[in-house]
Length: 342
Figure 1 (cartoon, rainbow, N blue to C red):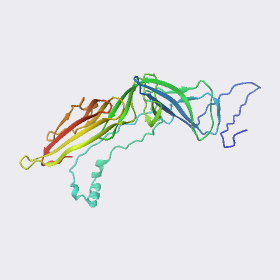
Figure 2: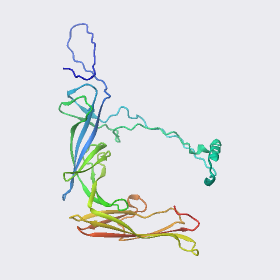
Figure 3: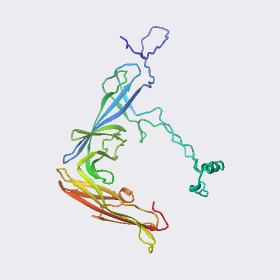
Figure 4: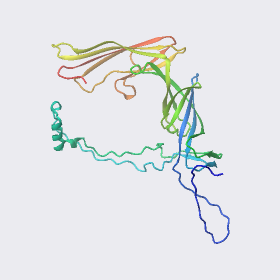
């Protein structure tokens, strides 16, 4: 029986001079079909951590045709993807005297606009590029062909199919940022040694077979190293306490302003194992000679300007189960009295 809902139908008329037998191959585009990758990332945390990537694809087709026992190939080709780069437009700059903002009324604003001052904020038009579902940075199309017939019926629901499993050696790090978080987080790094691209996709995260979170994985090309967060480590507690803070004048004689701050950072290990914790915090930095910033830390950070980020400090702490380690950080900022600290 034909399907009860509305479906697509193709009628082909063939004229031949005499009776014959032949094979017909018909190719056409269907717009009502999509697919997207999906991953299950399974981390094991024993003495030799491993990361297993179970790849899958979510397929949806609502063309009205039932695909029964078809040879299915999934490709990252996007026909609507932009075939050429955007243009670089000239950028013109102008300078003018700064209007006093305190006396800037609506009437003066209209006058400035009529005088052409508003042209200062006009830049070249921005061309919005339609976002493609998959970004192919290597210029090579990813393609998956199934070696068995597939059946995907016309529906409004996704069908999940498996795309294979990849295995990687993993390194686990506990990262602590007490400036923003109350717990450390489990960070997993690995190199893509599979020779295949991992496509941008939603992913479920498992730690020792326990589902802990969902995330989005960016594209990982072959040979690239990447890092993925696998949720908080609730047993590594962080506190950042401001012990002393002073803002204001140091006195009329010195004619300078000064800010001081003393902070204590505590990392408490309430788990049943020892952790190597990467602790990150910051001190301010400046590019002005008149603004002086001095800081001190105990213990001294393992690295300063961590990963080329100015003022970001990094400590590597080995904290045994049940122990607490502290870091003391102090900063002193001075600047001329006639200036304002921003």
